[in-house]
Image (cartoon, rainbow, N blue to C red):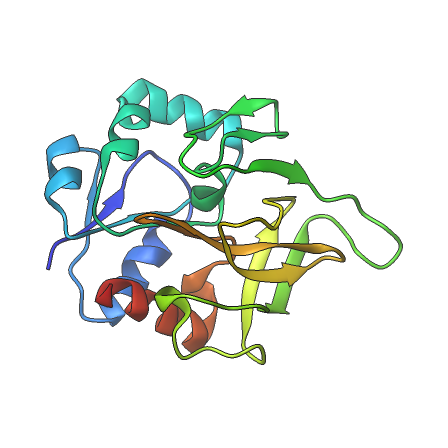
Length: 195
């Protein structure tokens, strides 16, 4: 099975590669459209800021390639947010693969921004999250979020509910870091590889 990890000079790539290798995969880090098209699975990790990430995708032409992919595709953290239509972060148009607009958390006395640390998942559904329960916790680091909608397959709270995982057709996304979420994150990556 060929596993491609999208190379657009985004952050957090090496830890995703290592997590996949621990599962026995041999992932390929690539920006080559043909490699991405023929891969059995594609992962789209990211850390950083939406407008610079979209600029990098446009400069490489990947903004036109990624929406055409038909195999299982998983966006992680910023990689999930970029699947939406627009981000409030620097007023950024995004890939438009899922119908959500990314918004900034509003801090209060009990909830800081960024939302950072372990949080449990709620209202889980779908094969990506098979075997998980609402007692399971995953690791988040983010200041922006996708609201809950029809595409939401898991949610968390900070303090209001937000999308912790999404799906539309072959496109999946998780706001948390699978590669930093211990056994739960490993289970999710294994589920993705089995799709």
